[in-house]
Image (cartoon, rainbow over all chains, first blue to last red; front, side, top):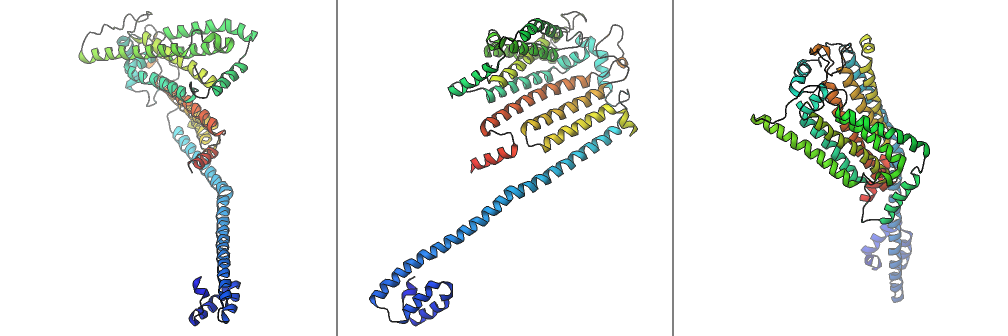
Length: 334
Length: 123
């Protein structure tokens, strides 16, 4: 700016060159034709300040314009670009899914026919389980003998998967005890409001059905090594019965015997018993010791070694975890 | 094609798997994604159970006097499906719990909207 106020010939020429850029420069040039008076110099300083402001304004304008372009591009990518990407994604997804189905269908059409004994899946492994299973495990149900004796470790892991999933849901959904009390009250109240109250049809029906369901569940649980059934199916039946009871009679009735405390005790005892008894049996088996657990007389209720007890343990875990899932999803607490 | 009709259970399982997989990929609603995931699970169990069946044979529970392996269907797929069902129950519960948490935080089930809001929050 100081360059523009001086009156050297060189500077003047330079200014004439830049005059086209800004109309203000013309006026400065006119002033600079005469030798600068004192008052004139003051005025030029004023001019300079004004010019500086104008320049800043111009820059701001440019910046605003650029920002506008950027916003436009952004909004384009938000509206049109996203839509295009979504369309391409959907088309690709459909193509991939159709390709997967086509490949799998061709594979299926090359498999041996359904129900045919020549399927490669029917090999010596299943024959071994069927022929030697009853003598080795004492269970008449080959599946129970397989999952609770030959593959007992796998089933222990499975019950733990269920238990850990329940713990994770508890962590995720449980409302903080110390945190927002109002939110907690609202959730509870909301649940109580929508709870069926004195629904006479439901209560009569449940009064008849719940004992039957629970008994059937216990039967399936205890009969797992003798017939169809086992810990998982029996536990699921008991859990369903408990959920029906809860729905018919409400939380106040169910909380008399089903609280987070009983959940903790039951699942911990069941999983601990499973782990300890199987650890003992593995230890003895690996070291050639007498474990004191024999297959017993096949067909009796207390036979097949540990299998009925393990069935009960697994059933307890499954029943409690199913009930806990239900109450957690409904009111965020046990 | 003829074998495809003979293998109709497996074919059904495969088509169900495809439907579930498509649901998983195409829907932006988290609940529908969970439903699609459960469908793929169930399709696989149907496939395994269908593979274990042998026409005209008994359920894998010992009957007095019959000890030949040829008399019973294969018990292994039943055990595997049992394992799978338990795991899928756990996974479904976990997914639904996470969905509830996301809904509480962002008040939407749209996965894109959740991603956008999360990115905006990160800055």
